[in-house]
Length: 308
Length: 145
Image (cartoon, rainbow over all chains, first blue to last red; front, side, top):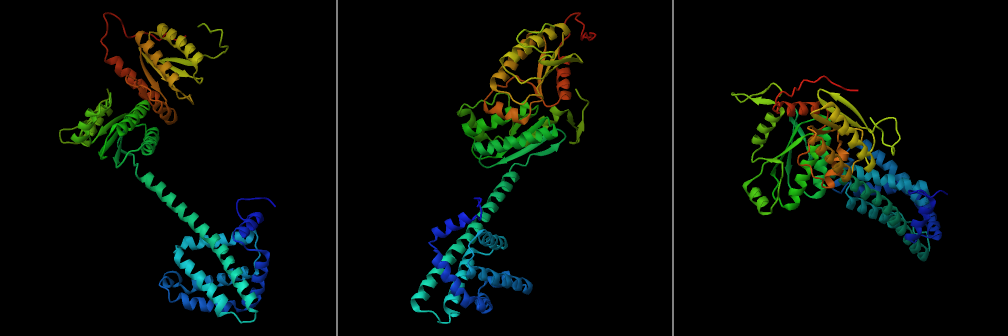
């Protein structure tokens, strides 16, 4: 059998060993299933009687159609459980259930509580006392191990999906945090807020170079008034960025230099070389207009000067 | 134009065209020590022949460039400057630029643009800022072989 990442029979048997579920256990489960499977509708009734008392119920099951559908799926789920065909399809199915629960946002504690309730219903409420005590105990043990196994598959999917969501959100946050904008013909601007470490500065550089390539802008204004601390490392990142934009034919002006930052930079001996820096965004913008050949009229408007 | 014995090719290392008093050298091969040497010879010779006042180094065909290549090109621009031509780098893409910057190359004094159009504008600007020397006429007919 081909060994695939998900749901191969070797994976199934590996997991069973991990959870110490022996073929004998499976036999006991199937035998118990003969008692339980005919009573599954009673299980569903008892389960939802209990679930109605939980606060989450209204949130997830207020729609009767959704409720009926969920109950149907539940019947199938537990029939599968008691028939115990541990193979690829079984694993795949359990993982799908995990996905569904994760996607609708059912809290994991609620899920665990439901599983526990289910176990109690199966082993106490629906038990018809037909087995010898020793065998009954062994069966309960087998069922418990199996339920743990089952739940683990669901939980694994749950946590994988949550992690994916988190990394998607991080990605979105990252993209939102480098909004390079064209504020005028040939003039780009990027306000930088917060901490600049080497990863962030790489992202900033990539975003800027990409936008410069798209827009063929001549000037980019990097406003650092939102940056708290400019030490040697940060200054080097910023200077590196200005070098890169210059090689793409776009002059980078750093605006928003505060008196505190100016003092720190000189005291640290940071040399910006040819890079233009200004205190205010406004000054940077005026310089940008001059460079791109636009002129600021007496009435404060901007007009295109004859090109040099 | 003599072709160096080491490199046997029909085409030159750079395609060269004189446009508007600027020599545009379009580099067609990835750079290495030997290519740079040939490029140097070809470009300087052409600058002398054409008396171009501007040299545009078109790098848009280059996929890679390391710090040595960049230094080599900068040396070429220094030589061109001694022959009276101001240089502009054109067509350095984000990938190349990122690597060069990581390698901490010195770019003070380097002029670069993204497009040829902008490079010509830059060239014209630096020409017009120069004072005409005596009766040295700036209106030459293009003598391009």
